[in-house]
Image (cartoon, rainbow, N blue to C red):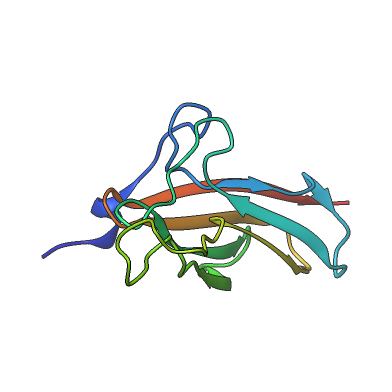
Length: 131
């Protein structure tokens, strides 16, 4: 039987354009909202074309003392230059990045999973401490 973890790829985002980069403070105040930015291609640009693009990013939080992860949000990117005129002829392109806010009362790990329409699922993560 297949297991989804077999299909989620990981690498260093500094060298691999598919890895989600999570940017936020390393330490946050318990119970106070803070901003989290997730994007791809920070060091190595990822294409955003009709043929090759990031379709979505899902952000999760895994509290240090909890068995389960919690979905913070799911973000879809729908415009990649497609048009009735043909591929990459459209007037609209979305950037494969998102900024969101959330709060937590526990330290833990942020985990982002992104889906490239050609190269599958990729994961990035970042530890969060409480002040």
